[in-house]
Length: 393
Ligand SMILES: Cc1ncc(COP(=O)(O)O)c(C=O)c1O
Image 1 (cartoon, protein in one colour):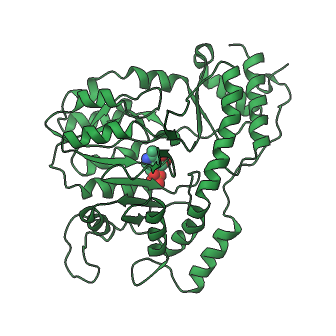
Image 2 (cartoon, rainbow, N blue to C red):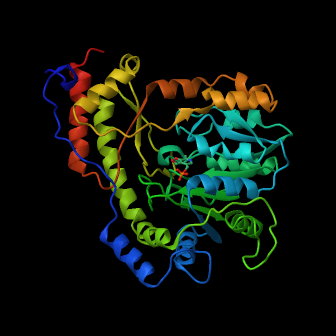
Image 3 (cartoon, rainbow, N blue to C red):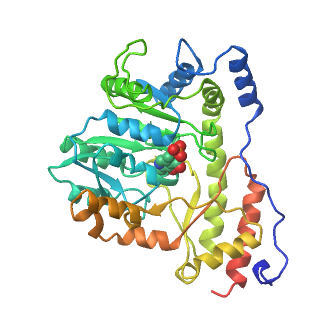
């Protein structure tokens, strides 16, 4: 069979995949707008309602809304009041703004390689990376797979380090019965377009600590700890969420478990079919419930060697591929240059990260979104099969 990239007929019809608001979200926004609520700045509002419901879902004391996952992570880091120049362990393989807010807060990221079984920070390597200058740990639950959060929690506890969970890809994922975002001092969530909960843009931080909750609110309020005060108490920004954003979030939260189930069903299709084609998939670790923000799989070596061509061949068959935004962060040039300028310790730019390198070389991720019909996932698998079987690998 001739591949579409070589002039053959594409196996699939184009599928215009976009995330659209449902009727519940539209009604909720209209209700908020009709009530005259635009911003969360003053009085009782929809943002507070969203925060309360988010905290209830997570069985935690506080949830503080903000305008992006990035501002959630920045606010959480700032809220820990860590000593300037101290070190914070971060995974080598995650989204860039899971790490860069450390640089605004004058802290040093120390990269720790990932574990191929979870794609999250390797807890044993994290233990080796701790020094007396370690102030905190920020692991990511990548692609919705819970990382070794219980081990990392113990490690943080033994070393009086803070633990911030980057849950921007793990809404509703569990270890045992506990949801991600409730293990550490703070859990950070993004509501960007393709996330398991979306408001277009948006963020939320969970915490059980009163002091952290207060700091988060001060951070989003331009540094003011009391909204009616004339004083500014710390470096802060306008990180507030609008009320109509929260109005989208409330029905999205309600649908989270159902949508996660649909994603898991879609993931099962990929898992079964891709394994047969020689791809290495990531099985759920015992006692964990991943939520498949995307479906990651490692390409067979011979295809990995021609990954760009493989991607192009899939796209030519009309397979919808997400943009990759997970990159090996130690390789980012501006970060290396900044590390030199700021005299970061040698380990910042001289370590080797073999697992990250392997994963980066072989990883491909597919949409699992709850709005993607199961039938389309089967068709995507048909196209992958065609490209694997008839391509020149
Ligand atoms: C792991 C991770 N951390 C942080 C972020 C930042 O979130 P946002 O895009 O909402 O600022 C994202 C978003 O893609 C993410 O996936």
